[in-house]
Length: 88
Image (cartoon, rainbow, N blue to C red; front, side, top):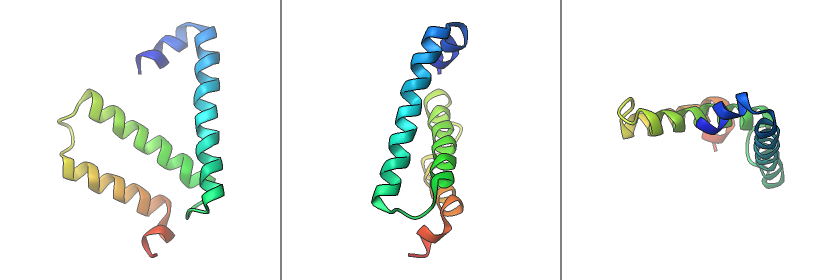
């Protein structure tokens, strides 16, 4: 989070961080397509965004959700983004 905030003040850092994060996202999308997992590219991106913020919550305010709530939220995010994954 601090690195991202610093990138808003330093264009050269923003460029490098954008390139690195974009490469990671592209790798996730490519891996998803190659492994023929359920869902589409939008599902992958929605899960990436939702779960990254959940990680931020766990790192910065760990008491906000219980362990069970985290498990339930992750399961719900996957089920809603990729409903065919939960039907087998």
